[in-house]
Image (cartoon, rainbow, N blue to C red; front, side, top):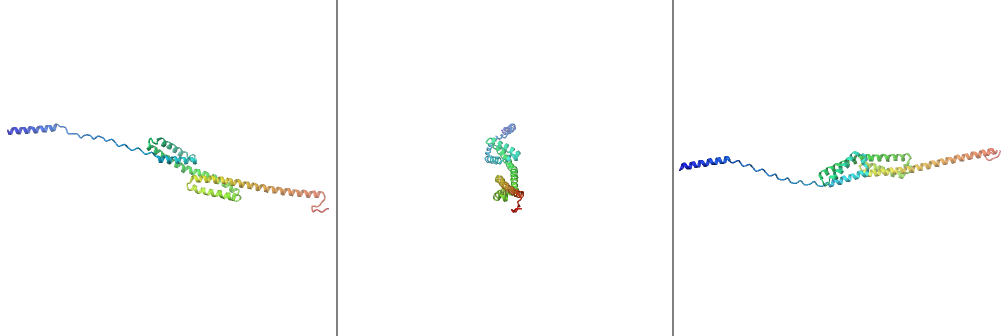
Amino acid sequence: MRRIIYLGAVVGALFLIISCASTPPQQPKPETPQPQAAQPAAAAPDAELAQAKSLQQRVDALGLGTYDPEDYAAANKDFQAGQDSYGKDNAASKKSLQAAISEYNAVISKGGALFLARLQEQTEASKKAADDLKASVAVKDDYASANGLYKKALQEKDAGDIENASGDFSQSRDDFDAVTKVAQQKKDAAVQALQSAQQDKSASEQKAADAQKALKDEGFSSSGSGQ
């Protein structure tokens, strides 16, 4: 009886071993990939758009594009690209607008300096014409006003104030031209008066000479006594 029980236990153990050996190991279940969280859409670059537009208007109002055409063309191209992609691809729009802002500022820096240098040169030419006519004496008050405005424009130029400097250079140039015109008129009038006086003197001297000759021809003395 014990032998039968023992054999049964052995057989059971063998069956268990065989059963375990034949059962494939359990493979871990692959992890189900989690869907990536949706990236938030880029905000519309409203600030960049407004800044680029403001800079473009400033450049155009002063006419600075002609002084730095390369940067001006690049700025307009990037500004247009930024407008075209606005609301469609805001990240690309912001990048283009930032490039346009940088380029418009370059136009203002380079073109503004050349623009003011030209206006200063024109103003100084007008001032020289007034100085050559001694307008600071002949038209004292108006000359002083024009010269004061010119000095103010120089200070504004050094401060980088393109708008005010350009306006004051232009106004002082026009004022110097007006002063020069008045000084020229005064000079012309003085020259004409001098010439008239000289002509009158010559005519008087000629009349006196003619009278003396007539007296002599008549046999009279120039002193008024007879011979």
